[in-house]
Image (tube, rainbow, N blue to C red):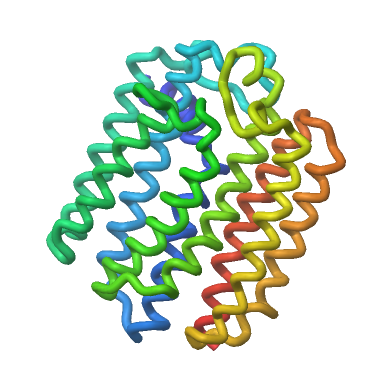
Length: 294
């Protein structure tokens, strides 16, 4: 039985989206090392585990809640959703989501011990929005706020929180790098919602693509890439002068993804664009690490 459950849970965890949780911790640690000259690997590991578990819990809640609301049907263009397809029961998906939140809470205990109440101020809302992204009285994904949520929580908060755990400070450098990370992470949500815009419109899921139209949101995807690139110039002031040049490693592929989305109608090919956007995040983290290490 455990072996039979592993594959559906892995599918529900959505591995292609996990760079959105890992990259903010990665770049936050790299920035911390640049600013403070040291890195606490134990706290870094705890931060990474907590971030990944919250992301997986968010994906599981999204799977079961979208199925309950009729937003996932047999017409969807993306990967199968385990609740809607019957691979896992609603109870099993809820249990998995809660279990990952518990693990995230346990991983956060050393962070709280190291830095105090501010860690809880970050962790408690993050845990709530794992559910509140899709559920609750004001589900963000159904109000066109998914991209903004990702920019804030998977960008500014995640990077800034990682830097705070490592250094005890939360400076302007973390805000800038957090915005960059959030903008690139939001591309994942944007592509996902563009792919599913027709199904979301039919089911009443008011994503940004549904509310403002696919063409405008495609332009926002371009704008996010450009804004993230423009922010690299701040590297000159926090000791990473090569950051703008090294950013071509992730910026050019990102432009390719945005161009592909702009000229292509929503369809299964968007799954490839989604994977490329996740790869872009990894390239962003690798290039940033190189930039602060030079």
